[in-house]
Length: 343
Image (cartoon, rainbow, N blue to C red; front, side):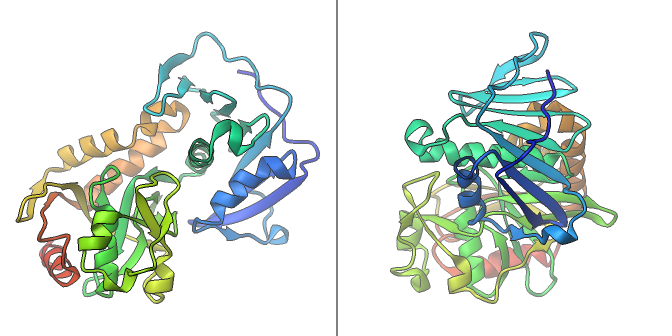
């Protein structure tokens, strides 16, 4: 795969701080940068003082022209669950869809994105938002940050970080919101970054807004959200989103050290069941949840290492959430805290 040089005169260059790293966004013009800036505004990214940053830890370069280089025939190629095409080997990583491309190489901290004409009419807002997320995650992977589809809260008495991992609709947002309503600190209800440190793995929140299904709003005992959660979520129009810091202003935490990991699912049964699982089973589930640990082969070693460290340091459980756990914040907090304090 041919290399791509830095944009010689980027019309826009912005720096963002997250999880102790500096992320640089370079774009050929304001229109190319706009989708990234709009999505970044809803994440826990902080503008970075360019004068204080000698170099960025990772860079996203957004191109209009020329077209992306041809993909070498020798790369392994397969279709992702998004319907996009991934091309990869130990050196190259490419994600392709209709009207866009994302490219990265081993040994560099840059990710190149080609959008052509980046209008929402052509790609659609959902695809464009997903593209921004995947391209940014590819950049984060190149500086030791690895995404996981999970929520996180901090148990008030012990200070332990608790992660709720699972697909959309598995109860992560409802559990996080109910715990926040009982005074627990929270990172995110859906999207985290993992970073390995000398003391172990840390989790950092990405998305600021919470998104709840209509059924959770109606039957979750969350009266403080009445009339607040009204805006549709970009990835799921059946959910309504709100800014948790408007409702729980003292609750936000940037990061935590995970000590418990719950793999959540909804059973619609009356009683909740919680079963501890082995470290091996926990790792197997994490790998199934994080396919980019295999798709992006140049970054795979670090990704798998972070997931393995998370499985080692966390007591892991399968949480089969019944109607008792999702209808009363006080009961939810007591149930989860009882397990956190004996682990």
